Length: 101
Image (cartoon, rainbow, N blue to C red):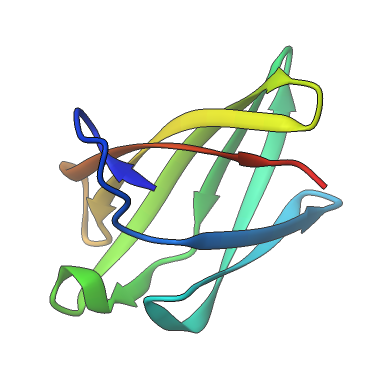
């Protein structure tokens, strides 16, 4: 994951998905984060449960994301964090890319 407009990797994320739900972990964060997703045309739209994010000072956030297959075996997309108690407050935007296994 890279902050929007940056080439610097901020978080190294792994997500395992199936049947409409995902479990995600990051090198920078010890806890597993749960999310749900749906497939809409050529995109996958997902949203995490609220969790305390140590990279954001422990603030309770919800991560929203959209991904697309960009090439065989490759995915890319965008996401944004909102405060859990203020869902219209975007606090961080990012882009991501990775391998689909």
